Image (cartoon, rainbow, N blue to C red; front, top):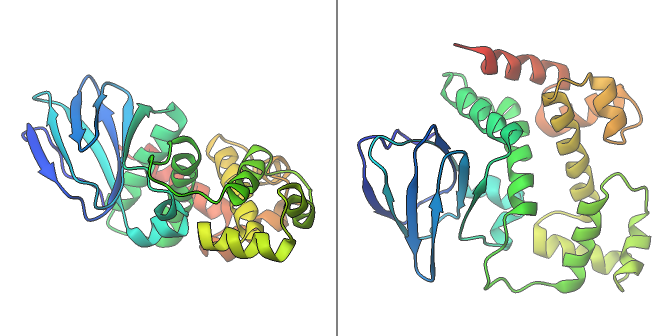
Amino acid sequence: MVGRSLTDIHEWSIVPPAASLTLVWGDGSCAISFEGGALQMGPGDWMWIDSGFAHRGENVPGSNFLTVFISDELVAEAGLDLAPIGACSQPAPKALADVLTILAVLLLDGKPTRAVERPALDVLLNYVGTVFEPGPDVAADMLVQRARVILDSDPLSGMPLTALARTVGLSGSELSRRFKRRFRITPVVYRKQLRLVLAMKRLLGGATVSKAAHDACFSDAAHLSRTFKEQYGITPSAWVERVTTAATRP
């Protein structure tokens, strides 16, 4: 769901029913306060707020914001619900701000489909989950967290997951069990998703399916296409065509 314009709303206080990612348009700005902290958003910044995270806000009159609300189900699938962030703001990388805009257009075009929206959302959630800092109250399984850091740092590595488990001092089955308990998915699926996200970033950057497959360590274009369609129900080429159409719509 895409949030309404806040142009005429100067102050608010809310416990949001869904997580949100908000981008400041133009020269707008706003201040957010919450128990234990506060943050300021300026031009080009974006902000993540967890579902149920009570906060208050005040924006400069005339400011415009793009807000996409993300359901608890989708956040859970990304593993973010097990590593709460609370509220966090930072400058938005242009490429990812463009993805957020594309996602908003897809949601508003009157024909929303999970297959088309979900790849763009995965790119955004992968960034949020790996760059926005978790909240201070998160109880971490340090061995599992170390395994995730290793996967994040080199998702293209061919290291067998049994070797990864030994690296962090666990058996393969124990790593899989504890990783799934923490992040809702197994290390095997997590690495596959990291590679899909990398492929999607390459596709959004104009790469061919073959080039994206090579860069994301799929054996060939057919392997990427098969994996992409199994995950999202649409081929990479069809997805790029739909996203490109949305991005160029007046």
